[in-house]
Image (cartoon, rainbow, N blue to C red; front, top):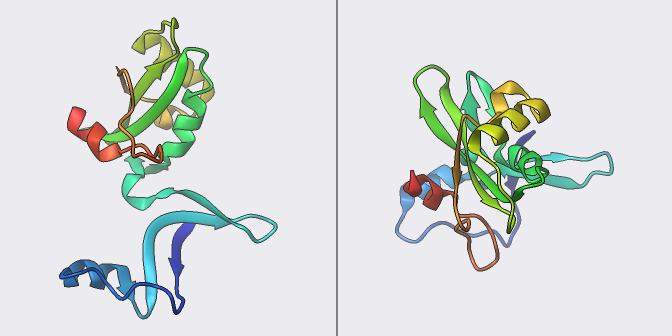
Length: 151
């Protein structure tokens, strides 16, 4: 896994009136996207997530998309999104925002217990919050910064 960087004649020249952001993103002619990716066996680039969204739990890297993919396998979960929550002992821990399926019921404790059986202990959400809908763009991308505001 590494950062996706690119260079082409069509890449942008910089951010309007934001020289610091431009310098951080454009380095030596390369655009540093802040996205994580890896190549599969056929040479295709696979998007994994954003470095800014990675959760660091006791030195371990937790990719939100990986935890979310497991959480939505729970029979009561329709949608899931996770963010980092500061923790004095571990640095950060996983906090999950869950939208349940219509008519389904599950408690935070039951979901955490189920998670412990289905993922590594450091990836298991320590906090669960149930919400009616995940904040998202028109294209359906979850707006994690809005989830942080709900805290």
